[in-house]
Length: 226
Ligand SMILES: N[C@@H](CCC(=O)N[C@@H](CS)C(=O)NCC(=O)O)C(=O)O
Image 1 (cartoon, rainbow, N blue to C red):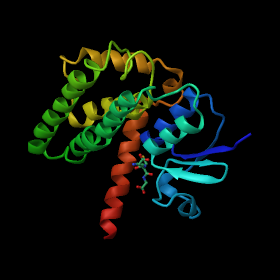
Image 2: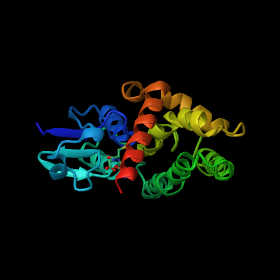
Image 3: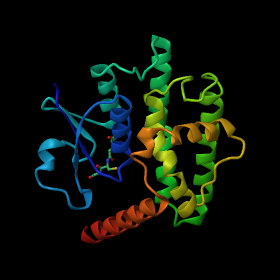
């Protein structure tokens, strides 16, 4: 029996992506919790970037959550979590790339610049534009749903999901709003929110707000040292 270990941090959305895919596929794994606010020295030997998640499968390490999840889908093919045909797989990769290169930068900018009211207005508008793009170019064009790519869940759903869980944080701290004219996106989130893999890995708004507070404190302390 092959051995799967996941180096993770409870509050990390990227590690959550991989935990959800492991659960969706019914893969048994050992969870190694790394406290990123106080990480052990040996962790550098496991994780070349010093980040979580890292998957170790039969002693070999893989990092970067999107790559880990694609690896898991190839190494543990059941149930398949990518479309069966090459065009469908290309579309799935386009949306996974969109998450990293457009959606996440919009959320990061909104949070990082939230103390600047002038920038916050523009950043909120940008995030709304990104959400509308997803509504029209992904969810309305790729099929009837309820999942991102149609009738069954794929890696794309789990790539985005942790960040929609944290949307309540963006609302609370930076005044983000779900656009009213994105009903498919809302429905998508409602369906995903009921999956066991999400229920087992999600956290409350209070938990996320406390993590944000710790993160801000750690960043302020680090800036003070330079
Ligand atoms: N692109 C990476 C991002 C992983 C990441 O940023 N993880 C954060 C925690 S949520 C981390 O380990 N940060 C520690 C650090 O940057 O030193 C992925 O998708 O796996």
